Length: 437
Image 1 (cartoon, one colour):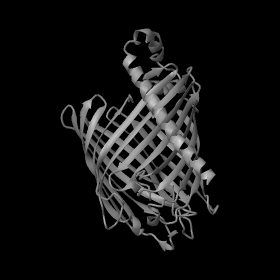
Image 2: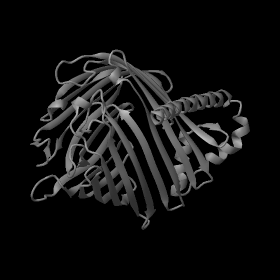
Image 3: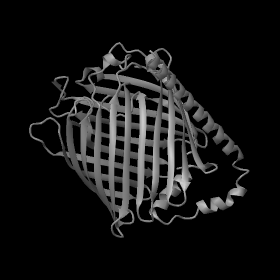
Image 4: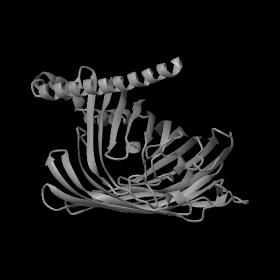
């Protein structure tokens, strides 16, 4: 009993520390913003140093980070972030029948705080906390942190990037997640990438990463879920890029991976080889890679799968922007103690300006999860399709402050019955960030 009280006290103090941290950061950011004009003259020398054109690969990356973190507080460079949204969710409990709606509101304050170490390193921490509130359904209310860190270092020719993060949340994360309903999960990830030139036109990259997925039993939603598996996945990638022309490069990579079930200690392996092109033109950019891979999908005889990964962005005229993407890759499954699913997803998006401050944004994406012959709860799943479309009217109020009015529609058609449903979400929100793209 005493241990339980101590644990509750510790968790309570943890959130008090989090809230105090964000209040301090925003107060400091506000002071920096108010006095930034008075300090412009005294910081001319530093500004001139920062705007000196970088020469090496590492200096270019560090300069990009400095441009994003415009606010200064001593040696700290700060990029505040704030997102607010509110709306109506017609299927707040993600049910296939007995659908009930509810009004919701969410606020996500955060900050990226970095330190530039000479011309050879930049270290930053990104901390955000999302406050999610539903009017009727208290089981949908949540407060969860998102913590990430990044280190950039190297030399004129060698770039080293280290990334890591931690998130615990009870909400939907991405469209291609096979569990697209609220579930209490913890994700810890880390990656190190080293990029260096081989010749004047060719560069190589080497990357090693690890991702840990843990699912936590939720008393409010526990009856909705199957037996979810905790996994830890490792992968190692070697890639190359050959600059054929100034605006055209040939790219490719080879990836091997290993996934282990943390409960049963069963494991599975996969590999993939992809190759393609990357192009950068004034109004047309993108990259397309295609190839083959192999992983455990439950078949008696393993077979190679066709894989693809590509994005294309096109600007028509001065304002109209169109884009498309497609992906087919091996993913760890939360339903399987060993084996993988193959997830295929494709979509389009558009940005259409109407007048100076008014624009329409829309997207459409859909895909399928392929489990092969693997069984889920003793049954094969031959049908698992998903579709999502969204449309928003955006009004730019002031610089990077904009209001958004619109909604999203999602449809899941699957043999996993608890995920088979339709859902509308109507949204009104706005966001503001000091990010300078």
